[in-house]
Length: 485
Ligand code: F6P
Image (tube, rainbow, N blue to C red; front, top):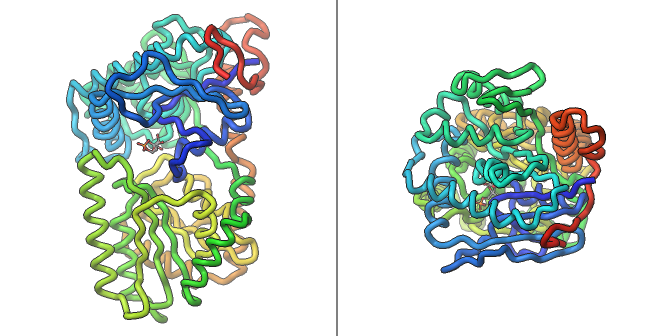
């Protein structure tokens, strides 16, 4: 019976005032809510001289251990290497990558410091699950410190082809760290294939048909574990009083018009500019009456200290202003563009009122908004999801209208098709997708990754029967030298 210890760059306690839009934090929190455990990482705060020990807080069966970053590491590790190197690289945007040796040193240093900070809280009977591109070397650092517990890693973003990965000057040093994990998980088969290609081309290693990787004298496992959502929770959210109240308010303001909705962090990977251009094209060509629709685009600010994000924000402001100026009537504005966050209940209400949900990233690991959109629909009158083929979610949600997010004509036609789709077809598509979301939900994701990690570790413990404990069996919060929770 092992305790689950989750490590990620950002920790988002249940009590946080920050509003989440899809993504890692929502997934991790939902996973921990079910199993209990510890969540360790950055508090989101920058301080002059961060404390040597993490701050421990608990709520229910979840303990949070958080550390601040100093200003230099915030710039170099988070804004620098993580978000100006790895993020664009992993989203196939070589044109936006920017490598600085200092940034990489800071990235390694933060991972090492964080591993040191977690160490005293480990019990020796934990199952450690590290998440995302910020923390690639974390497992290797723990191994250097003698931690023998099972350690797994999950890549939430896409994992690009080897030809792109090798443009990163430190790629050998960085990706070698992945071999310290017992198990590395990816969102899609495509991402896994890219990892295997990299292993065989760049490390001289080999990969067995079952995903076992042999490289640099290490043997580890790899696999596909598409992240889900807490489907029942989101279905229920759509029916809460708050969701219904917001839905009603929004519906009244539409005066019978159809709503198209998009909810994305401000990020160049989300395909927002192309989406707005597609909507502009729709207004030019819409056959019935263009003032019959509204686009509600909710785009909370993100990573504003990174120049590319600030530039994109300005472009979005300009383009939405241009489209509104071009098409608005004195009693109708085509785009309601909102640059702030809403809570999940409010979003569920918006999704429920809409006829079309737009999720058109140029590249996305999974995209949980696509799943939340489907879960929030009214069974008697469901909306239609228009989904990018380059979102991981498209591999599972083929009953959406799947589009090429670089093709404004295709997006515009898909919106039109969605607006005109008969109720029976909408219901059919929606119920099939909801069934899949129920089957492959967040619990399924956690259980399949964790049980695989336990099994791999057990196999490696070579015959130490029962030593790794029962697959999937997790103890809520156990004791360590410093007891967390
Ligand atoms: O899903 C990718 C991701 O980078 C997560 O790791 C993160 O929680 C989310 O996007 C939001 O980004 P940030 O933590 O940089 O605000």
